[in-house]
Length: 126
Length: 110
Length: 85
Image (cartoon, rainbow over all chains, first blue to last red):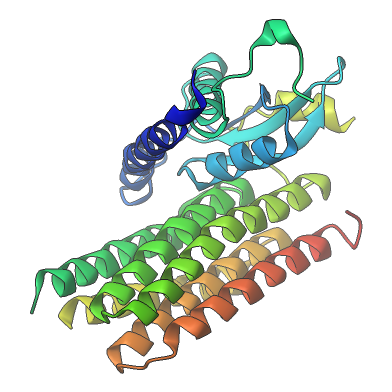
């Protein structure tokens, strides 16, 4: 992707994120403000694609700001890659939670890096 | 009574609704992690909505610039604060509610 | 300014609810989270009261209160963890 499309990609990601916040606040509101509990809380390990510290911090902040999900901290996997512990309240099972979170991180990387997603064949960014 | 004023008041009410939801959630949700999740949303989005609404009700360049700076700081710091408290809760072994699937965390802490 | 007044009632209710959570606990972590929400609802209340009174400098107050609330949250997290990081 070209560098010059960055502002456009960023605006598109921001709009998508705002919609996502509205969508998920609906499920939280309808659970909290009515009787009974419908939450299925779980903790999942999200393998981070983000290489830079700034991106890892940003995805944690974005996940925490989304209603219903909360970042608990970063741990290191056996192969040295970073994983984010995420507490989710309204995902029915682990794969669906991971799918949503991985999708959010991919969109974030597309919206905030100069050339879009870093090409895995070229190895890690310096 | 202009459109700007009306929009500002609507944003204030919307932000207050987010706050009330977080307050009710703080009382009704079962454990510290779900409560922290509710509070983090209110702190970021609720305060941003209320401050943006207040800035629209009181128009002018000066309040607008200050409000934008305040919102940016608020959104950036509130989530980090909530993560810090949640992380401290995990490390100091605060319990998850019984229906929580925390098997991933159990192997991490041992 | 009826919208601002309605919002003040809602935020005031949230202040009460977070004080209730701080009083009943049951764990220190719950009290820390209650204190966090209390700080943020007071920030929102400052903004609303300032606009209702037509005050000029209210957003300066909000800005400073935001940064103090951040430091308070970090201090609470540190307390929960007994000073360890």
